[in-house]
Length: 166
Image 1: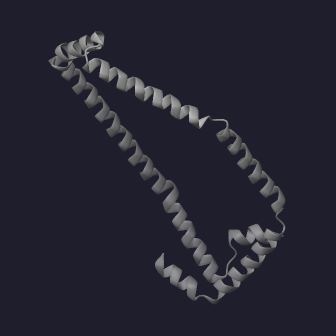
Image 2: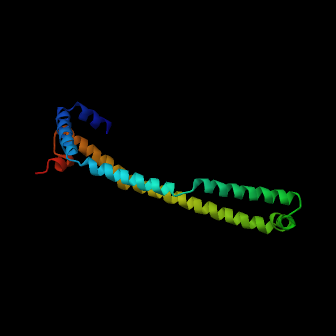
């Protein structure tokens, strides 16, 4: 690939072809209606803006503040003994759940299931990457190498077919 790139850069035909493509690209750009592109982009901006403005950010933060205050109230009531039901729940949870072997066996089972799921996920990702390499990336670089050879040798390429089809 590097050797072909060096040959491509040294070839006299490369400059002629690139100049021809540049002129064709500039001519094509002159035919584009920028007004419609600008108006479509502005419309997208206005729609996004109206979506964001529809959210009452101040209310969201007030609600979050209320949730945080409720949590702190609950902690304070629990520590001061004003919420006996919560104290009973925590005591029962500790005495009958956290210290039981059955609880930890179940946690261990769930943990190993999650490890297996994660392992399968990464194995599938690895297979997908291998597939992308063989099906997409390697063919792309082979095509790129062939394309560079065509330019260096002054042969017709797909770009010539796009711009200069007759």
